[in-house]
Amino acid sequence: MAGPAASKKAERDQLRDQLRGYRCSTAQVALEMMRRFGVRPRTAWRYALGWTQWKLAQEFNRANPGARLTEARISEYESWPHGGVRPTVQMLARLAALFGPSCDTHQLVDAADLAAMPDADRLLLTGVRPQPCDQSPGASLSTVGTGAYPGQDEFAGRRRRRDALLARGPEMGSEEEIAMEAADQSAEFGAWAEGTNVGPVTIEQLHDQVRQLASGLIGPRVLFDRALVLRNRVFDTIEGHQYPDQSRDLYVVAGWLCAMLCSASNKLGQHAAAEAQARTAWLCGEIADHNDLRAWSRALQANAAYWRGDVLRAAQLSEDGLRYARTGTAGLQLTCQIAADRARLGHVDDANAALNRIRDEREHADTAADVGQSFSCHQVRQYGFTGAAHLRLGRPVDALGEFNDALVLVDLAPHAYGLSTVHLVRLDAVRAYLRLRQLDGANDMIRPVLALPPDRRDDPIVQRAGTVSDLLGEREWQATPLARQLQEEIADFRADSAARRALPPAQ
Picture 1: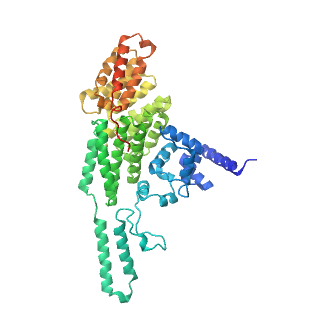
Picture 2: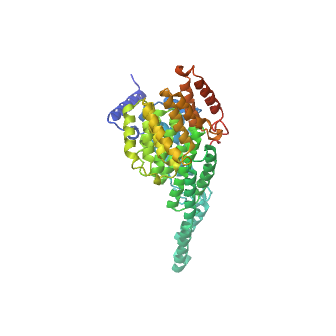
Picture 3: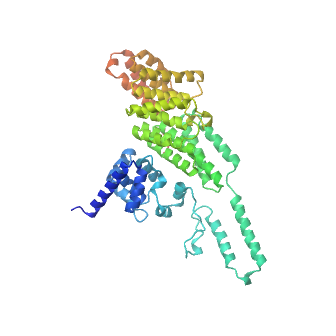
């Protein structure tokens, strides 16, 4: 006879299958798991996917190379704060990414989690600072003033003076004295509330620095170093005191900087780090309620997943990002990524549908609203993606036409586009030439790529060059001296690259 645990599992499986039959999202299934079975968020999301703790640990370790998560630790994370071990915000973000595009980090915590977690974690998840004057009934004033977070002692002192004023009897001062003391306290609070550690000029300067870094013309290592310094400065500023609108602006700046760190990490071959940066960029977009940042964060998450080899997840993340694309070319970027990813997966109808949408949207693309070239789906990038999709769909002639259109624009403005974008287009054009059995055309096309200095040979370029080398190793080229020569040159090219040189420290 099946025991109570088996019966509960059968109930959960039946509920999940029923809701899936109604085409409910994983988020909807998780909410119903919480309501029906009284489980907490992290457990509910696991139930919504039908995973055991062992299965979740295995999937996590597969998605995060080098991780050593165990089912016992999963159990501890799910038990906290009523026992177990507290999951860090980074761990929550990684679990949310694993649970799928419909899961955001804040959906994995409940009131008990928020009450027990450190102030900094709560702020990152909710954007709300703790109120130092909120105490449980019966808490003594002696427990206040421990300096647990910036400004706590100052807040506690003001509260003690307010409480003392309320406790005064008629014999403890005239009405005029009490009124004046109350007025002084209001003025003191007003002076604090009006104070801020950042002004409009500083915020404008930060936005300008973001746009300069987002030019797309800086090498990945230099970009990483500069963005890291500025990001840390913004993080420190957020920990101070500013108006709500100023805090929102700072979170937007921090989000774009994390997005740049994602891009740089990805180009340096640090794909797991890139995804972590993209998740933080997404979280900043959530706190600031900034759709453009949300959309580009999804695009970056998808790009990191693609280069890590998880093409299906890349496509799903891009599709989820379309919900937030409102201005600029974020929607076009996401659609371009969907076309290329679906083509690589062999989903012909979905890829063709995305290509049709790109043709319709090109005429209305507003690059003027983009933050900078790094976050802009300009025409060279568009043609690169559509060409890649045609190539994957077995249409090398159409692909080569798209690539040539892109390179014509590069010839007209040779210093206007990032080297990584341009040379990925060239390498894809090389692949198209090889598919068309035109080795001379491939040789001419690859020459500018092989001339790149090592510090500009980022990981995507090195990976794509490896794909070209694999094509040159196919049987039809084995007896061709030029093919063998190109393979040797590509091997030398890949041996010294930005990704193989000094890598950024783990953040």
